[in-house]
Length: 90
Image (cartoon, rainbow, N blue to C red):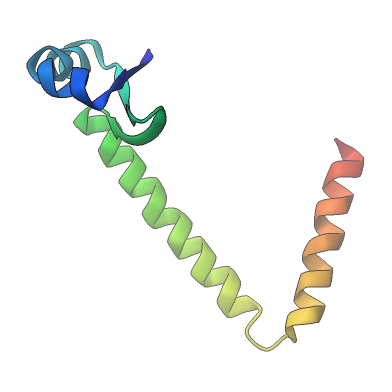
């Protein structure tokens, strides 16, 4: 479950919120002035996010290397065509 709290309440209830995240595997979005500024998630989820981020960055580097010799306008046109094709199928 994902819950939301403001920064003051979070600070006042840190221990309880840590327990909620650790034992119930909930996530907490912390807001300041009504805007999300941080999230508290359990360590296992954080590790998964870090691994996915590393995979995503490696994939971006492979795509960038694959398009290295192609002019930018041509690469963008190819991407636009792929997006349009995908949307037409959907």
